[in-house]
Length: 257
Image (cartoon, rainbow, N blue to C red; front, side):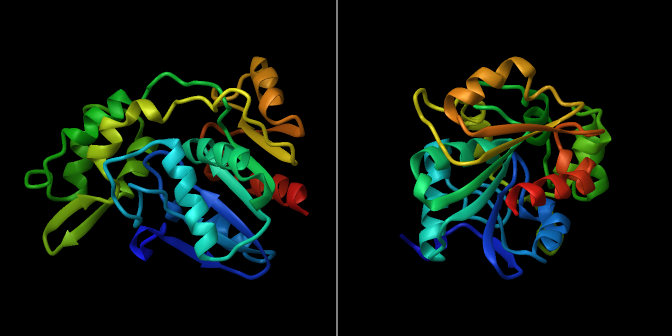
């Protein structure tokens, strides 16, 4: 296990380890504000998953590998009985990891994703990202203007633009590995394998205005996570931790303490 293949993270605070996994096209920076709040009570690990943020790039990308990356990270930092939060794609990683390595987790929080299969639905985003030519779109404004042809929602574009950085003087690039994420897009919606279970306390958080966790999915959640609780965060969509951080923080802290 090469140290260069250990996931990049930002660690803040002291106490019981709380690991946070971002979603598709995201990165640890998305969780900085909440991470600082949680750091009053926990040692918070804001983690970049492979092909995202400042972690290593690799053409291979699936949930078995993402779970293995997290296992390697926990072993490298010699962590035990961690609290684990995963949002969206990170929630899928967290679910699989918990069913594979239950002894390493004390409590599990899954944010706005269920164990079911989701059909690929990021086609417009991927088309927009792949239309960027950084020799032409050589400012953030030009990148945004180009993305606007594919993605009308300003919030989604702003989220994606956080990944644009100066690779070197005068040269922009994406932090994520767009080639791998494009080629492996079908992996992101894969379901949790049948018969995989995690029996410890699990909290599912759903956005009131999000369609990712529907009431009829309670049965599939129960089948994988028999000791679960589902809580809806008000006035929030899929990015509930960013849209209603106050309620999100309160519900998570109540669950963990």
